Amino acid sequence: MDSEIAFDYSPRFRIFKNGRIERLVPETFVPPSLNPENGVVSKDAVYSPKKNLSLRITSLRKPSLTPAIRKSHYSSTFTAELSSWKQLSLQFTTLFSHQLSQPPIASPSQ
Image 1 (cartoon, rainbow, N blue to C red):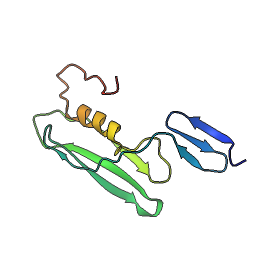
Image 2 (cartoon, rainbow, N blue to C red):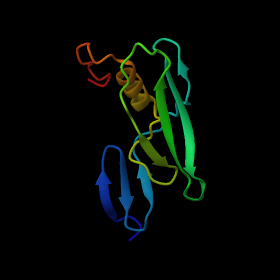
Image 3 (cartoon, helix red, strand yellow):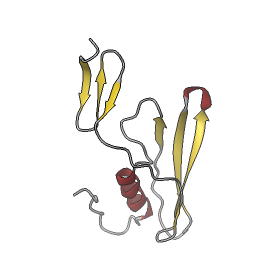
Image 4 (cartoon, rainbow, N blue to C red):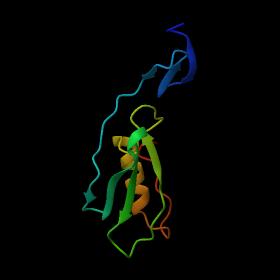
């Protein structure tokens, strides 16, 4: 029973019937920060300490840019992807700092 897979979300993670979660992709934590190249600022905030739930807030320091809105919830016990993961953070920072009047940006993973 311990090794029976309940849900397989490969290549990200697997959930087993006993509740164990196996991450298949290593996490690379990116701390919240100010990106001086594009003026994007991010900050983590805990909104439910009892359940260990937090979110990452992203905003712009440059008022000339048109902001995109992003809200990411995550917990230390179960996540599909964290907003603090390196690849996801790079994609959102690029998207967030992009002006809507410009042509779309290709994803760094493409």
